[in-house]
Length: 250
Image (cartoon, rainbow, N blue to C red; front, top):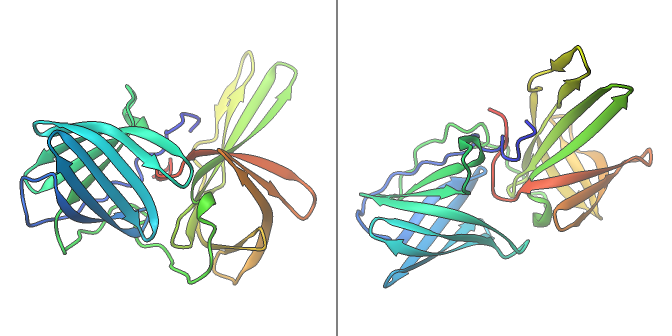
């Protein structure tokens, strides 16, 4: 689970169905991280651009078309982040692959098609608990915190993951511990995944796991880091793995 997108990705591959065919242009509907999403795409010669609107959270696509394929960059104007993408047009569908890596676990494939009908996603995040709570969109996405223990020749690292979704749903893991020493090694395996709702008030994160809202921690977000400060004074600095990608567990 320490691979950057061990991640990700396989938790989310939204699939959508469509009616119009063979065009790079138009409006496409889908689901990203459990949120109803619209892709509006335009073509000008070999240039292809588009806007992905996830209920107000915007991503921009800029690329070039070569026949039935396209390559370019996906930009997040909220965080100023970007990542490469490739796309393929096939009949009614545009398949977008986010990220480039020789490791297939470090990619995400999203299939957009023109349709008013939407097939259900296999992702466990496809039907999150929705809330009307306020959420700070800056901390939406996937985060990892690593706790390292070293004693003599033995060392262990535990990775924890949290994913905050724009609709007020979130998931977190118990953590996975791996490590060892000269003659022994261990791997605890993927921990359990827990769903919850989340909101932000007065620079603090509140969680509801089914028993009502509970204070979690104060937060400070800057760039790719999220610092949580708990009531006992403990600080944790979490690393942003991605704003766009889904979770590293399935």
